[in-house]
Image (tube, rainbow, N blue to C red):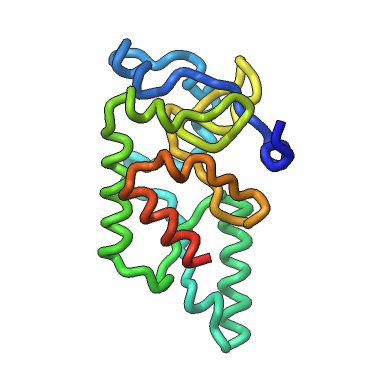
Amino acid sequence: MDPKTRKLGGSLKVPFVQELAKENPSSVPTRYIHPDKDQYPTISNGGSFHQIPVMDMQSLFSSAEEASDLELQKLHSACKECGFFQLINHGVSSSLVEKLKSEVQDFFNLPMAEKNKYGQEPGDVEGYGQAFVKSEEQKLDWADMLYMITQPEDLKRPHLFPKLPLSLRFWKLRALQFT
């Protein structure tokens, strides 16, 4: 096994969610049903909802130490409590973000035979499928993904790059330029 793969762990191969949904569109296999779903924030009937934490990148790098420290505290809390956040004032144009979203959607709309070309290799986490599947009993997300590592440099494995559709190769190159 490649030493770089060992750093991230491997992943067992599982059926693609899009294929499972086509086979039986009215049922979700039990492996994808999380009995502890109540732990996740949901919109209540009363209309109130949990807010997604918003981080301001300009405040994170502000020369005003107090503003920067406050934003760092918010970031720490968001990562610890929610596991995700929305980043604003990052300097990436909305048109560029929308173009990337469109290109990614185009990838997921490809026929299954085409997406299979990007499937994860045994014991790897990169590629199309689900990453970090450790056991046959593990609960899985009802979603497929395309997972590629661009940073840090020592974990980058360019084996998927030549196979990517041309439009996504552009985005991976852009990601490398920004890092």
